[in-house]
Length: 396
Image (cartoon, rainbow, N blue to C red):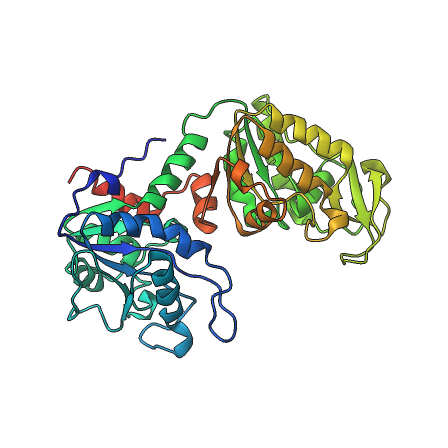
């Protein structure tokens, strides 16, 4: 896997008008206050680079799920403009109705373009809209990996028509990290896939089963695999109608001399709550009314050993209901093993990032992906439209 895209660092931006598609879609409270600004902070290095080069910078992003052609007060990027200005140490003017131009931005200045998903044709990757936006700039920079799996006007169409198109610093880092993890990985390649449902991650499980040496499954996914292996799982969350698919994944792994290591002990309770009483039992001792909510210490130790010997680790999803302390042991031990491993590790997905924050291992993970859906689709081997558009412009 060798994705070839132009990189921002290789371009001369002096005096150029630069259009950056960033992902500034941050959570806000009912009063419109930003509650978590990771995505804004992640966009700053690319913006700073362009400003330092003497570029006139326009930044575009979506926020929430607005209706195209309509603009409601909650759709505004005004709080983002304020926070971005604080981080950059310079004013960031917010521009409404920007598609047809009519605004000015000088070299060394930055403006934020109002919510791009309010523009008619954005989500349908409208060609006329894409050409209008391309006419605003000399260089288009895609730095929004989190939206790379969507073919929209600001992520795909504009890249076709802008005079030059490249990947920003964040996008380049994502492409490099994912290519390193899956392109020609150091063996053993270990994937950890947790989550509630096999159905939501079936394609990624099948795709990884063809590549990895160990496929660690957790959460409801592991319960479905246990059921497929003939184990009793009580009232645990599982998908009995997908046992055939689970068998197929295990058979595929077995045929390659690889493995899906399943729990030998589990932590059970009769309900999922902060007050639930947790019991550790052998997998063969799960009762009719038990719910499996975590892996047990023997299983966690075995998985930690697999992780310790890995060459590359891809992590998407916890192995238990780690939000409650009594069901967090498995995910905590796995997180610690990843943190201490010499392997290159890449992690992505909302629950995974929450676990990384909870167990404070961010500085010991090789790369933390900012994209949820895009991260999963890349792992599945799908072509991401935004990256494909940049690849098509590589030799321009």
